[in-house]
Image (cartoon, rainbow, N blue to C red; front, side, top):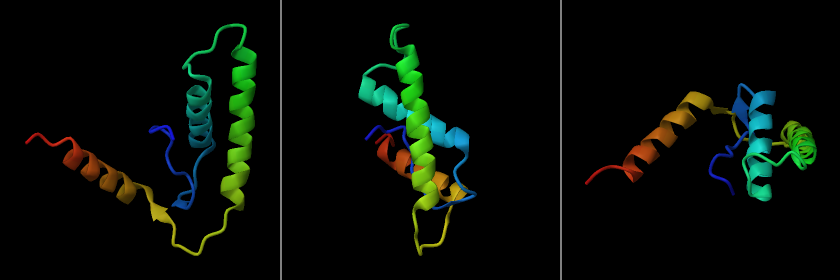
Length: 90
């Protein structure tokens, strides 16, 4: 999976449409193997992003969990700590 795609399910506040769109864009870029499509493929690329964003929104909205929602700031702090440990100079 692309490193830039983040988990969007079970957060408080819920994932925004911008976050869903960004994840869809990263997914299509990864699958297509390009960050910017040629003019000939631009329409297909954009349509794929919109379709995947739409389906992703439905998926997130329909998933069920009994776990308490995660806090974005807490999860960001954990990720920052993991990154600092991973890339610490020894």
